[in-house]
Image (cartoon, rainbow, N blue to C red; front, side, top):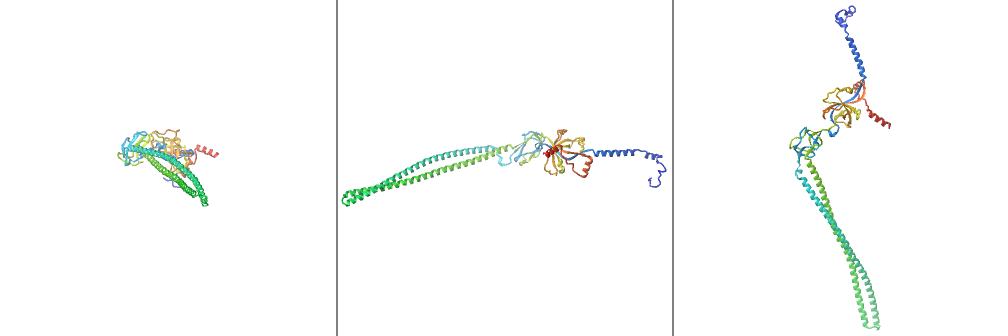
Length: 453
């Protein structure tokens, strides 16, 4: 019955005199509950001042520390047709083991003796180049002989020219002598004729002088002819010298032209030999590519192109392989706002999928089932998911990571930051503030040294 009346019954009658009243008023659970609330409030206040480790959590996957240890696919450098498989999925192969054999699909390489025939072409072209070298040597000798003969012939012609010049000089002197004799004969004839006219000389003497004058004139004319002939010989000698130079220049030029032609043919043949040697090396290397081998030791994961007789293009993925030796790592992603808080060498806790764990993100020391890691690489460019990639390696000073972990399994990461009171962390979370900006101890020392300098 509700106590809504202004007449209070409990002032006139005590309810403790009744059994039901005693059952209600004598219970002490109110005291216990009040004490509990007080204790809870005290504990809550104490907890609010306990240290809380700020952290950045993220999701990632297990990978390998080095790029050459990650799962990869094997491709063929040339197009081909699958002829034979030597492995099956799950097999262990060593580096260099044959995985499959392929055959050519291009008609340019169908000849089984292509390498041998190309080698024969190289030998033939090399012999041709040697023959051209011999021809060049022979032409060089011929040019040397022509130059030697040219020198001798020119020297001979010059001697003839000198002889002709000397003969011209001699004939010139003789001509002057004949001219003098002619003047003397004319003077004697005039004198004897004058004497004959005066009657002092006989007609016979005049006729003798006239005969001598005629003989002297004949000798003078003959000497003039000799002088002109010797001059003509000089001209002929000079003409022969010029003709000799021209003839030998033509012969030498023709021999040089043949030599240059032979050299050009030799260079062209050597270029063909080099081209054939390149083709020979390519064909030889291509033949070795008909067997696809393992680039490193590992396990065959999956045949990406199966069957016999299947054709494929160059660079097409044929089979996947997982290296047998690898160093585990975890790649995780953080938001751009949290990236300045991550540093190389910073401690991170990792929880692997499939391994039971009790995680208190703010109290890493009381967590169970997490493993230590440290930051070894921070990506400088944002990923396609809008976050930055962080690579974590096992922390050698912490527990060893489980051996049964496989590359590609999931992981959850917790990067440990600054220690703050719990009330501050609650206040930060309620206001959606980022964690406190800080630098690790090593970074602080490095920064302080730099500032001092």
